[in-house]
Length: 360
Image 1 (cartoon, rainbow, N blue to C red):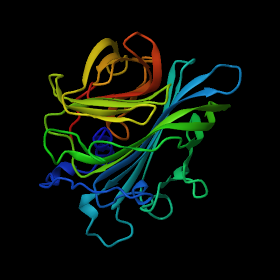
Image 2: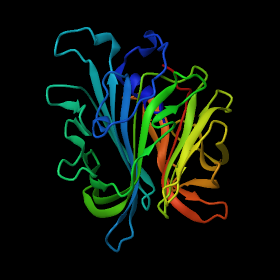
Image 3: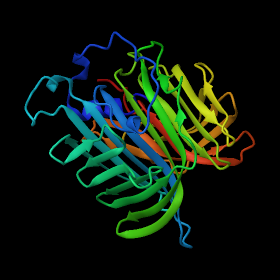
Image 4: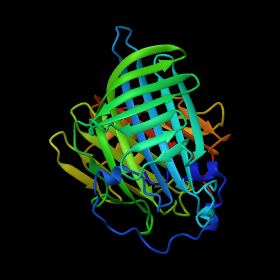
């Protein structure tokens, strides 16, 4: 969703984005054009390419993993008029994480650099992203394939993710509202059900894996509504080939300020959820021993197509990024159950604003 990354990016950069007035205009409706819109849009403030997924070892050991990798781009408003090549006009961030299901542990790492000098870049022509030795790009020979290489401190991701379904234009043909005011919106598409092969290395041990991934690409000028303190979001690949996304933004009292999402059936029928059609009801809460934040790690999520149960595969998937991005949030592999209690899919749950209200 729109702002789950914007606040982390702004905090990490140390930029007083709040000193720049909110836009008085709304994002205009536009027709997305590919492959151009797979690339970066540096004229807008915030952008990210966000991939989550589930993978199983192809050996007989039965190991299962969740994985997450995200590249961010943010425009630095204060430097836009500077002529020096050394001015940080665009910043590139990246996060990566692996959930070791059997080991019941989350591993994560992050990078940051200013764009330029061959160290970090986000192409405006297609998905080609680099941050030091971390890369994500659409394959030039096989445009339906994404290649990711992220060697981290205690783990590494080397993945190929192949499109087997068309992408989804979220909201109204890719223009997605994220708040009660029209200016709170983003350009947003998703690519669910990416067939995934590759290697996950964990503390020196490499696993050949296969699984499914989900990609979100989103870019916007607007930030959180002032009354929003956090959000809850799910992106789920269903076992039958369907795809579900749902989210809510919360106020300080915990009530929903805005909600939305979509469901695409295995046959390709797309339903865009209207505001007020999605509800998140906490079922079970886990308390972080690190931050004492209370996270609902099990939810009842009601949508126009089904009432689901979302359950974290392990409780402790909290990410503490206060030394870099300044944010503490929960993001991890979860199971999706239908109204009969049968598991129908897997994907990622993200929750922010529980350790502290998100403010710039």
